[in-house]
Length: 70
Image (cartoon, rainbow, N blue to C red; front, side, top):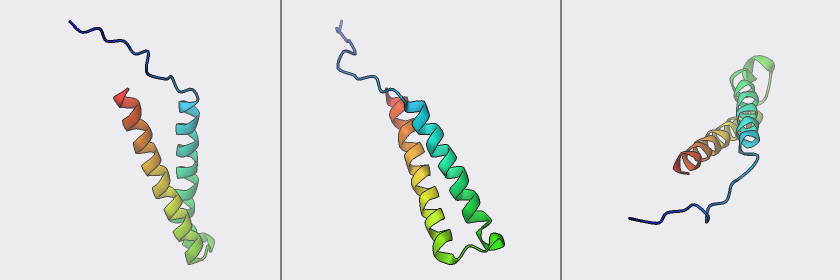
């Protein structure tokens, strides 16, 4: 029988707020990237919005994988 306790793990607060912020930024940057041509955004602005969207996706995947592991 093993004596397993979780005293070494630290509870992180505000995780829901981080995920919500990432989702919000993903939504805004994705919309800017998708509608950029119709709105008149130039090419570099659309590429930055796409890069921000990709970073948010990576952050959300990391967040949910770490949350699932705990």
